[in-house]
Image (cartoon, rainbow, N blue to C red; front, side, top):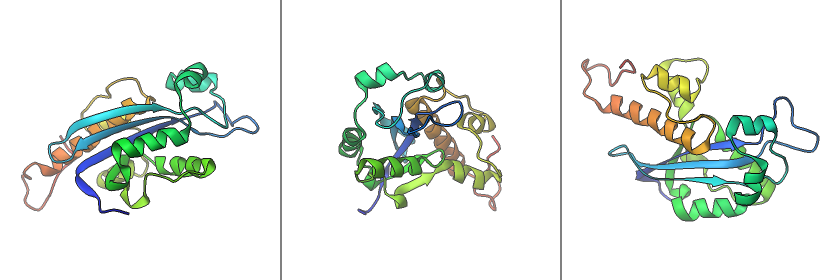
Length: 199
């Protein structure tokens, strides 16, 4: 893997096909939307962002999934692209192999699985992949990973937008990172404590 750049940071979020209970026979959960935000970790500003729709190959979009994500089967048929095309675009546009990438949870497993099934390289290398939800748990002492909405609330922030949209969730995840980074970088009142999560 090429040396990581530290002047850019990516944050991704995925939406997958889902059902109220178990997947129907012959179907599985697969990526249908990728949201990606790029930020400058020095000034904590968002540089650019994108949303990609992925046409499912092994499953159908259920009414439950549409209610949760707002995505319909028709929309994905018309505007979604195969995973291979989407990943090629992500690589060409964002260069994820050279930038640390945040996600709130283990989105990496879904990417690895779907890329393997599609027979394409995974553009998000393990050493550059950071589970911000896990980092948040370690910093706060939580024993369960809160939702993005709950973590924002604990930090005194509000969720911006409709949950379960990949780009919206990626924006809110980067907002958590921005808040943690801001508090860490602020002068500590107690020289023995680097930062506090208390507002």
